[in-house]
Length: 180
Ligand SMILES: Cc1cc2nc3c(=O)[nH]c(=O)nc-3n(C[C@H](O)[C@H](O)[C@H](O)COP(=O)(O)O)c2cc1C
Image 1 (cartoon, rainbow, N blue to C red):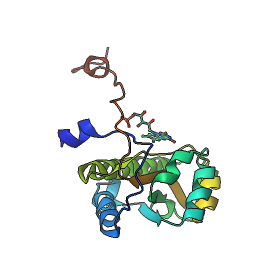
Image 2: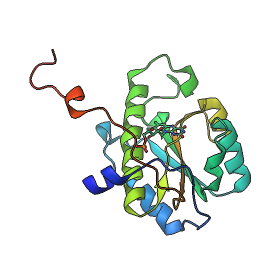
Image 3: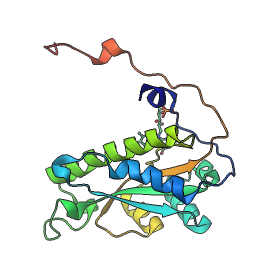
């Protein structure tokens, strides 16, 4: 696994080469099989190829025009109803800080992380994007209020080879037995 973990980059330039339905299915399969608290599996995935919908999504996602080169987007969402009854919370925007909402956000992270690594393994590229307000992105993607949108992945074959971005050192982030 370290090979893909080390070689993965956020890519923001893509070739026009299409991405097959089978490839999209395999990427989603990586997310489907991810672990989640209580095996709650909150994830839902919306696959977008339509250019007009892509443009609306990009406009909501801080107008990151480079995304449009990617032939397919996957909108990665957590269905809040998997943990929270609708009479407690109907819409993520109204979340008063419920622990269950945080659990959904947590579980989405691992599913999307698995997808990023499978995309790399398949020779494809992406960049997790999340520069949007929930409501604006729900409207752009046409998804219901009970979806928490954890990221939009533009997916394609890379047309750039970015250098590794720096990471903090091992010593900076690890302690043994005691923190201080
Ligand atoms: C949750 C999340 C949201 C992100 N949102 C954006 C984004 O909206 N636009 C963007 O260009 N990059 C975005 N990124 C990519 C980060 O900038 C990138 O992962 C980081 O700089 C490290 O670079 P690397 O992925 O190439 O290792 C996001 C990454 C994560 C994990």
